[in-house]
Image 1 (cartoon, helix red, strand yellow):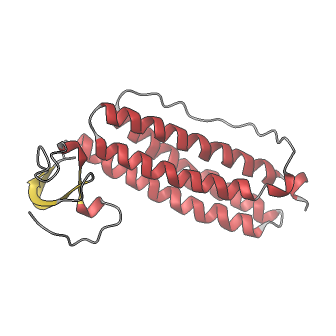
Image 2 (cartoon, rainbow, N blue to C red):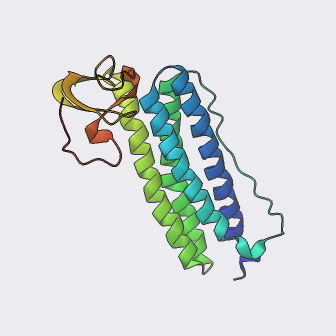
Image 3 (cartoon, one colour):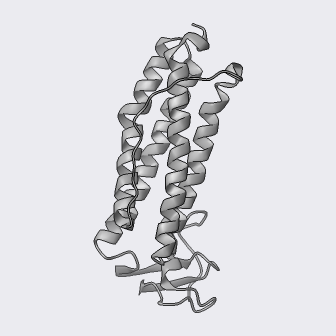
Length: 202
């Protein structure tokens, strides 16, 4: 089948639109988190937003052969304009789970049935990534609900996202002893990106 005559063409454009909007929603959510001095949540939203940009590019690149055309693609997209950071996390978790199942698996099945198995494989792979996004948002939402974002039942390591200092304690410091940034910059090392599970201690 020719891509220009396919349902996959429309699904690619819907996915590009969805990923682009997700990136913008998460960028705006990051601003809300920062305004609440929850800089670690700001970082989580920004980190995920950049991954959504990468997904959008994957879908957009498949449409390159249709450059210059306009593609009409109707869809329903969420409006998550909350001042409550927990609600922003929970809505993001919900939306990512929907992409994981059923949206992208359905798009993958359609692409495969139309003969675009390479596109189907990308839909399937990105669906799995969206599952990890949902799990990420859930983990931080759960900690906020339990009032354990900066407190633990056991002693563990906390990293300052500003300077990288690691402190071992049952609670993140009220201020980083190295750079003096507020508690809102601290994240459990076990949840921090780009780190091993073993770090330095103060």
